Length: 137
Image (cartoon, rainbow, N blue to C red; front, side):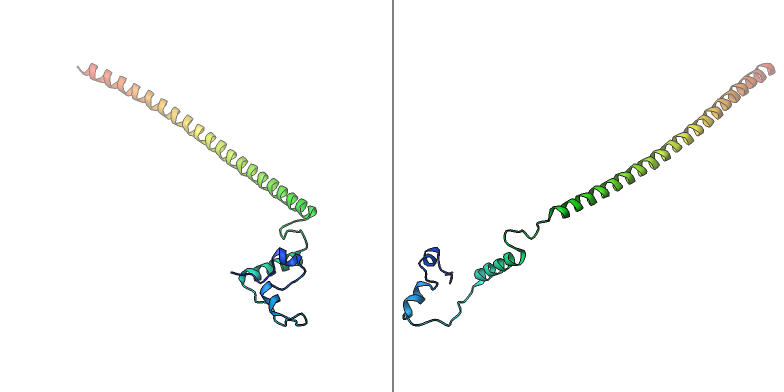
């Protein structure tokens, strides 16, 4: 694909026309034709317009220091709030676990007492059964 833009050597010679156009013109003739642009040339023009639109050397993503600091402070604040919420959730979870442990310990104590009572009752009944069977003989 041949570009209609002059090369660096053609630009330095002072002529803005490509060699094939320059040779076909007499010295007093001027051209009224506009050069045809292909897709690559249109991208170059669009890029140049973007540079002009956003300023020389300034990136479109570039943020000024005040904006960066503002974003940093917002992020820190969000992080603090999130960390506080996480601590509160953890505290609520720990309180729930401690309550559950206390309830289970209470139930375990009740069950151990019931077991002891039933074991004593079983022992007494066996003893009574043993005495009644031996006395009836």
